Length: 387
Ligand code: F3S
Image 1 (cartoon, protein in one colour):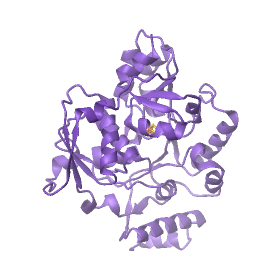
Image 2 (cartoon, helix red, strand yellow; image 1 turned 45 degrees about the vertical axis):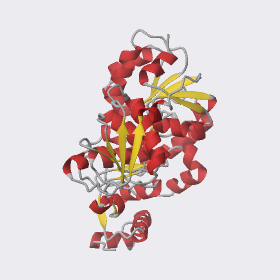
Image 3 (cartoon, rainbow, N blue to C red; image 1 turned 135 degrees about the vertical axis):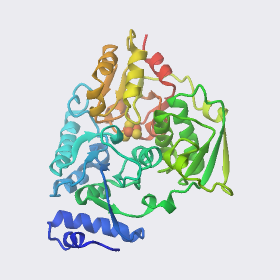
Image 4 (cartoon, rainbow, N blue to C red; image 1 turned 180 degrees about the horizontal axis):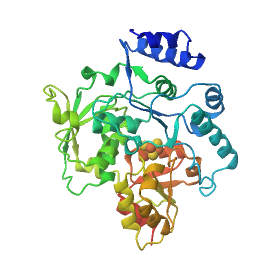
């Protein structure tokens, strides 16, 4: 694997032990996957930030590192909102440990934005190389933006943030971005909202596994694309997908589709996922809400009163930039929390049935929160939670 002279010096320990260890990690990873070189990255997004997932050993490892990030780097959602954890009912002992994890990352120069939607906060463009961890963010970056990132583990994303480079293999290379299976959607999608596209991703992820799908027969907008990718990365292992005539690479490149397996998806495959099961709480914002989603939720909640816990999750940056919508939402009794989500926060474990508008949350809530999950449109979610 080719390293430039500056990389060689880091590897030789001339810039301290932490950077040496991080370079060793990147080089080792590159060798395993046959990378010929490291490639500079524009940003990093680091998983392994919730104390619920990394625990004591992860915290000890972080605390012993000593270096600073050299590219913009943010964290994945953590187990609680940093400034409103008491209001969310987080256990003080958990909060203390979570604060220690955040402080360890801050010492490493990681920005204290804890979100799976870094693309709303930092400009990310077609062709950018990135080192992002969270599966829905990875899918959005690759598919919707046309940037390039493998699905990094927490340590490799952190190493990339501290070095500013990542091994150039996998989805960083043109040859690995070609469609491998076609999904032909035979449904009238005119009335489909974000939840329907999330359900499509939930269904399609199970069908395609880790192959790169090429969708035909749908015309999703940005929030719908976000929902498809997030769900497909949860029920399958899809880090990149294309949509005919919509996603940037499908518009730019005439991919050869002849000979690929074509899987049909019918309206009934999607609608069977929607039920009217009773729930104890409603949680939306998986992935974290866009400004448009916050605006829509505020519109639906205007003049309504919340009668069961209604959680809305978004990044702090998006919340700050959309204060008016957030105020309307909170006036109804709903709560808008930053930094965390319904899957990584231990608070959600108090409910036995949770309604979501996300295919990804539908897939993860049962295992991560021990609750049954129901998917519904955002209109249905608001109707269930309010009078
Ligand atoms: Fe984001 Fe949490 Fe969903 S990290 S994609 S809101 S499970």
